[in-house]
Figure 1: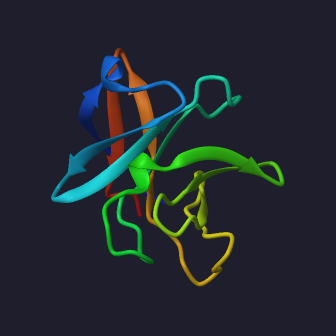
Figure 2: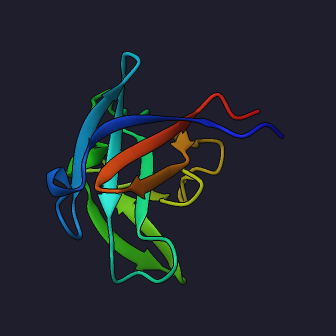
Figure 3: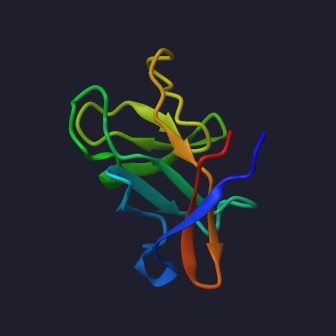
Length: 115
């Protein structure tokens, strides 16, 4: 597996603790969730497009935990997507794309092109 190329999408001060913000990455909307109290992994990047409603709203979803998994609830039809892998808990055939994400000296970077 090759290492991703890191691309800066915003600054750390643009993030909102325990909430989502949306950034553009090569024409795609990506929802970033900053959860500094969640343990080892504190930043998640997941597709902002909700496949059920067709709207770009995942970044406005509520964060929660179901059976130990951190999830975001889609705002319109309330499906729950795991933040670490994008899997929909109610519809296993649905999965949102996720990206590697990191904080690097105050910059939020998404990993692209990992293979």
